[in-house]
Length: 222
Image 1 (tube, rainbow, N blue to C red):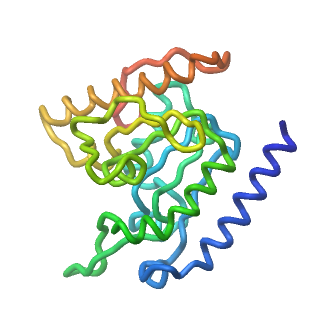
Image 2 (image 1 turned 90 degrees about the vertical axis):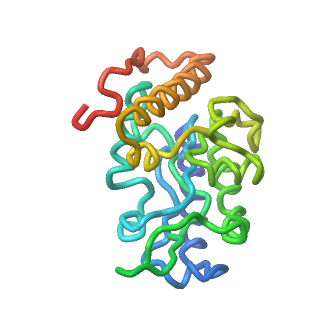
Image 3 (image 1 turned 135 degrees about the vertical axis):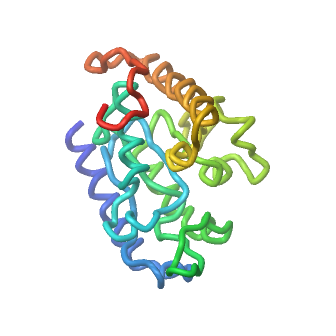
């Protein structure tokens, strides 16, 4: 098992080196750091977002800052630590558009996701996760097609690549933009999706996972 893990880690590191050298898209020239991914090279769960933001671009790590902290709490609520999963994005460089105060985040373009897809496919083939969680509409569409509607089709199981079970839910950054009643409604939907993931993992019991609880799921400091 440890030899397999080491081989997977070495394969991922070699792919990350190729990502850092990649300039297939204009965003490859504009980035500060490529953001390949991080986590357990033999993870049962892979989480795929749309693309790095400003903080991720600065640090070269996926899902840091407020969205990353929320993702960590979401994982913890179903008995998973960040180092037990693998986290990456559909594109490995920050997509930006000009703004009045400098570059601002945007969703990746289809051509950018297409150029980066071989790297994502390689990550999936190396890690061989049992479950893939697509975080946000762009990530979900990269797996399920441009007509996928996350508001109507999230929370269901689909056949993912390499035999993985695939489910889509809202991106943590989307939750952070909600307020009042809308926030409470979205939290309930995301909690439903998280429980789906936990239930799928528990089809093959893992003793060290504690029973999940929703208490404090989206609260700071929980």
